[in-house]
Amino acid sequence: MTSERATEDNLIRFDSREQAARLAFELIKNARREICFFGPLIDPVLLDNSEVIEAISAFCRHSRRTQVRIVVIDTQKNVVNSHQILPLAQRLTSSISIHIADRKHHDLRQQFILVDGTAYLFCPNAERYRGRIEKHAPAEVKDMQQEFEEIWNLSKPDRNTRRLHL
Image 1 (cartoon, rainbow, N blue to C red):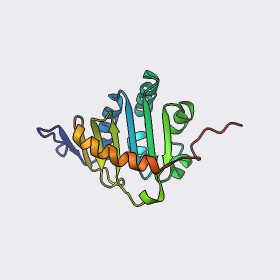
Image 2: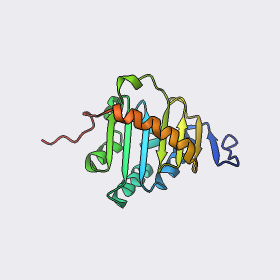
Image 3: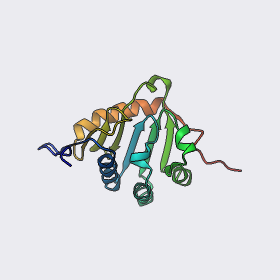
C-alpha cells in the first residue's frame, strides 16, 4: 500500500488492479446522481464483480433521476465474457445506457469514472491499473465531464448490449 498515498488536496495514486478495483467500488457505492464511465471496453476489473454490480443496482433503484452512462470503443469482449453489468443494463434500461464511441475517439486508451460532478478515477492507459482518484475535485471533474460529454454526444447506443425482445 505504499503506492497509495493521499496528498493535502485529496489525491490518491494507485498502481495495482486490486487498488483500482477497491477505489472504483468506493466511488460507485457513494454515488448519488450520476456515474459516467469511458474506456476501450466495460472494464472487467473495475466494473465486473458482485459488489460493484450490487452497488450500481442499488444506485439505480435509489431514484428515477439516477443514471449510469457508459461509453466504450467496443463491447464484443464484454458480451463474449458475459460481463455482469450487461444483464443489469438490460433490466434497468431507463437508468443504464451503454454507447459505442464515435470513430473520432477510437484512439483513446484511457479509462475513467466520473461520479456526481465531484469525484473521479483516472487511468491514462486502460491496460495498466496505474492512475489517480480524487473524491472531491469539482474543477478537475468539470474538465473531464466536458470531455465525456463530447464523447457521449458523438456516440451511438450499442446494439450488442440491448435487450432482445423475442
